Image (spheres, rainbow, N blue to C red):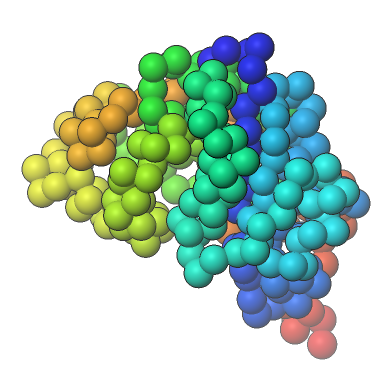
Length: 275
């Protein structure tokens, strides 16, 4: 990617948590979980700004995130929609309106969720440096060995292919027009994102069979996505594992808190045992 042009960023910050997890961290908004004295949203924006490669930062989320977004020097905070994909398109729409005809050199936009506690400028810059210039959608994939070496003892989900076991990183460089053309497919992928089987079904029955038989490699999935989406898709290998550790569960938070020198609150089961 051209390092001379700052890439604009959309940060969806509407993810919620509940139950004991929310009670322990003091918020129902994942982006506002505090680690190392700062919210994850602040940490995310600071990591992006630290690359020296970022243009405008657009946060999409509830009113509660405005203070943290301002502290991290976001350019604008937009009200959230009804779903994750809608939040992405709200951010992309704001950038499109702000640009008018737009600058082709700044066409692609970086999408980053706000639940990545270990995100660093180096991880982001490494991803951007590796993105092919002609790709419409680029996403990072990380090998299991690399993730487990970086985060020993943590839990994660891997897709077993013929060329290794992989997990998906959580940063996406996209052409907004390509995303808009495939809005229905994005909605379906968002609904299926927690299930390997549901994701495999989106690629068709032949792929399900090949997946079960472990005959697929990463490039097979790239080509199938290109056929479905009618655009150039690229899965970028060799990316930092920091792009793949997200806070989906209470255990993820506790792991991150310990690594980032916070003292995590007692787990509910620990409290009950002490009574």
